[in-house]
Image 1: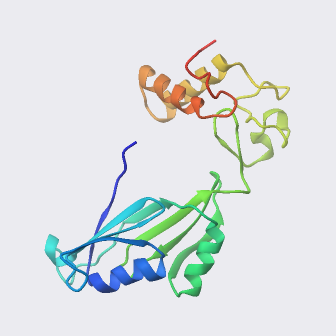
Image 2: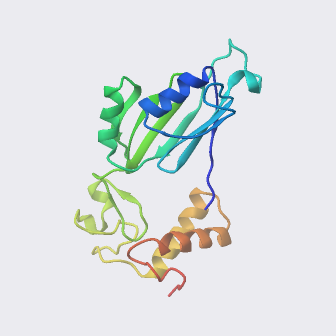
Length: 210
C-alpha cells in the first residue's frame, strides 16, 4: 500500500518543529542540513509523516497567509479522548472539539502555529459497524430486522434480520459503488471483492461469488 506525506510551508522552522514534537507528540525524523539551521524536517505520528520547509524557499511571501483550506486528516492509534485532553492541557488550539460523527468516526481538529489544521480521528467506539459490509450502524433503522443486537446492517440482511447470501451482498455493494462512486462494473467488482475479503462475515470467501 502506498502512502502520502504532505509538505507544509512554514514561517519559523525551529518553532514549528518544537510545536509538532513537544505539543502534538510527533516523533522527530530527519533534519537538513542540521538542527541549528533547518531547511527541511520531517516528523511522524503513528506511521504518518509531515514534512516541513521554509515558506520563503517555495516562493511564499511574508504577507501571504498560510494554511488556508488545508486540513490533514490523520487516523491515530491509542485513546483519542486522552490524546485530545493531553493537547488541551498543553495549550494547543482546538478549533473543533472531540465528537462522534454520524458516519462512525470520532474526531477533533487542532490548528498549528502556522494556521494549518489537523483532524485526528478514529473509528468511534460508540458506533457499531456491519460485519458484512463495514457500514457504520448508528440508528435503529440501520440494523437488520430493526434489531440493535444484529451484527448486520439493513442492506445486508433479509427482512427477518438474517444475513443475505454472499452473492446478494456482493451485487448490492457493486451497484452501490457504481452509483455513488461512479465506478464502471469491473472496477466496482474488484473494489467490492477487496472490501468483502476484509469483513468478518466473508473473510476468505470474497473471491467466490455463489
